[in-house]
Image (cartoon, rainbow, N blue to C red; front, side, top):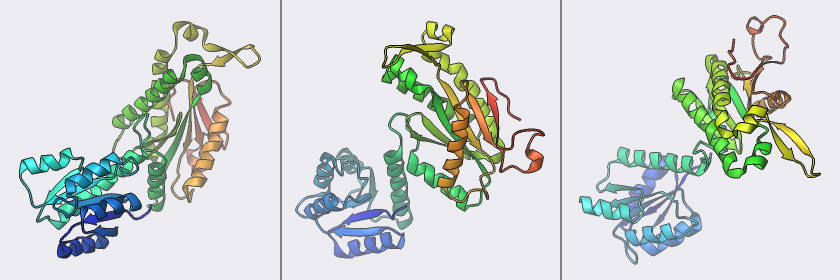
Length: 334
């Protein structure tokens, strides 16, 4: 992850130097400007991750700078913390109305200022990475979460979730309904996290109809089975009654021939005992992808579980070394 860049905008040289030192000491890359016009020019050139913006500035005051930044689509979403000696409520409201994200009155407290910066940067990163359809964290956050757990030596489960026969559903019902199917699955995942442990279960949206979950080792299988049951029950709301009764969709292919396409299902590739068996995200993704290909050979919803990393005493007798698949809704894991 790259070092965040902060633009410090302060006309008083002594205060500017203090802020520059404080930001560098905290590990940020720092640039500075002494007036409003210089700040606006540097913001457009550097596209910093955050701006510390004094209100009282030469040539262009902080409020004007803030308004101009919000009008420029290339930097409009840059987080801005306004710094000013004006601490009255109407002054704070005025700053926020110009588009500032936060407001810190002088003299600021070092710990508070750094905490506000850290929180705003984290919020900004999560918004930039979040999937616009579901609001769930995207690929950057997924990679960071998995890498963090791998580096910490945690023993966890990795779940890769993918909707089956999704293209046929989109072709029949349209993309708006396809989005509804994706949001339905995202809702099931969110409720599942709340049911188990939101503090230890991570959910991310890779894109399209692909999702990822990271769970503690004992809970991976129960969570996967719960998701399959809930999705298979709720997906009934996505179909017209006739399609549900038939159990398939009738689709005209490019040759004008009618073909039968199964209803949407869900494949979950479950990799257990990740800690100590995988060294990086790419290796783990490859294993999950192979499991997913195996699961998609089955028309029903399925949990495909990697067993090769498990100790011998955790593998059911006579079971294939590679995987164990549970089909359909109402599946109960081991």
